[in-house]
Structure formats: C-alpha cells, structure tokens
Length: 134
Image 1 (cartoon, rainbow, N blue to C red):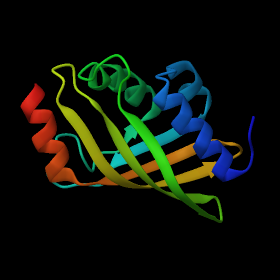
Image 2 (cartoon, helix red, strand yellow):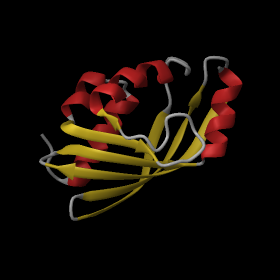
Image 3 (cartoon, one colour):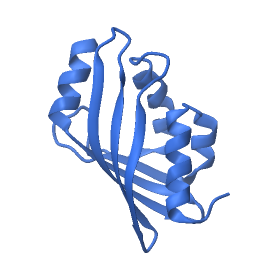
Image 4 (cartoon, rainbow, N blue to C red):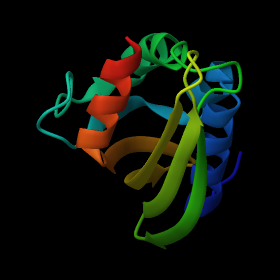
C-alpha cells in the first residue's frame, strides 16, 4: 500500500474514477469522515463515515452516464499528513447534459490511507446541475 500521502490521494481518486468501491474501502481508515464543506447542499456539513459514503456514492454516480464523473487532479500540495488537491470534475449525466466543476479538496492521510476528506466546490453550479437531471 502506498505511504506517500500524495500517492495515497492519487490512488483514492483513481479508485473513485473507476468506481472501484472495494478499492476505495481499502484506502480509507475505519474512522474515515467525508464532509462537503457547503451550506446550501442537502447533506452538506454533516460528516459522513466511510460505510455511509460507500452506500451513497453508487446512487449519486448512477445519475451519470456509464463513464461516470471523472476527477482530474491538477495540483497536489502536502504537509504534515494533509494533502490539498486542486481538481477539475467533468462528465455527462444520463440525459447527455454536461457536468463540469472545480474542486479544492483537503485529505488527511494516516498510515497509508485517507482518514478525512473535506470537499470544497462551486455549490451553486452543483445544485443547479443536479436539480436539472433529477
């Protein structure tokens, strides 16, 4: 298992992009927490444990076509077990409409796995995009 925090984040994002939820589960700690750092999205600001995230993700990703949304890491900065990742998300919903967003995610990495993920994005764009396809 990768131990360099940047490599752990790269492996985690790769597993998400491939929708390999078994691998995602291997790459998170038992006390993992995922928080969408927003005020105006359903479920935001409520930390989600790994088990819950792994149950919620397939339903959310089912809104997208078979390739799913893809997260492209554009910059990684690491210090003291934390990795800040600037990224672009893109994909197509099942109805063919495009999705594109920008992210700044904070990953806490411990013992070669992700302990916490705090996700920042353009929440207005996300809400508008998802509302249009639901």
